[in-house]
Image 1: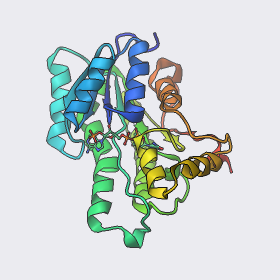
Image 2: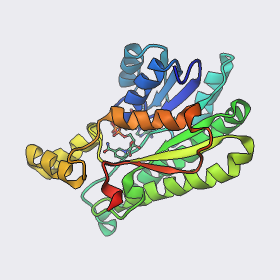
Image 3: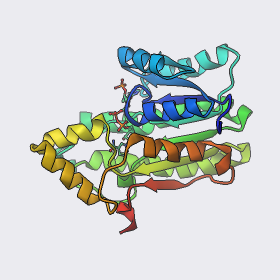
Image 4: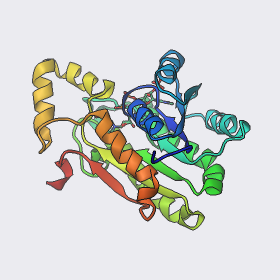
Length: 249
Ligand code: NDP
């Protein structure tokens, strides 16, 4: 019970890595709030995971971020952990083939969303001496062909993490991020469909990782749990690769 009675908010919590994190956090004793845009998917997820509820919202909208935090605090709850997991990607585009709308949507979700939510949550996290864990990506640490906007946004998220860690160290709020390699969720399934040959794509993606396979969402959730828990009490400002060895090369 490494998160016993900790109140945690997970954006992008209605599926994929966010939902796997919610499941694991609930098993570890946390009370979990999920935030995402798709209400049907969110309510199904909240029914499936004990001690979990869903609040619909869009991380790109400041008022939505503030409303979600106000909802949590209005129940007399504290907020101990924020996981910024909401993210989108447009694939198969060099930077020069990326539209301005795609660029803005990517940065608004992946960077501004984490900024807005962290800003809204900070007073409560200061009060609880809490922790933020951002879900960045290994492509925030190295260059990545075919999704420049996404890679640039994840690099920005890595440095937002480090900078916020420094700004809020005096508040005893820790800020870290995980940098996953490819993870078996809807996001990577879409990449495999775009590749044309789904089975071949699975082999190609597995071969990119020195461990010879993609990650499960649970494997990323365990790294997020570690960074959110008191076991990481002296860790702040790190970008932890969970990438099967890709960035070791
Ligand atoms: P999914 O596509 O399965 O999930 C994305 C999540 O983000 C959904 O819950 C979605 O919910 C939510 N989301 C997207 N836009 C918004 C928004 N504007 N406001 C609120 N929620 C939003 O992807 P994953 O679970 O794989 O990805 C989770 C995170 O992990 C992302 O940040 C992704 O970039 C990162 N990541 C994923 C990797 C992978 O290979 N899968 C590798 C490295 C990093 P809804 O659409 O209902 O709003």
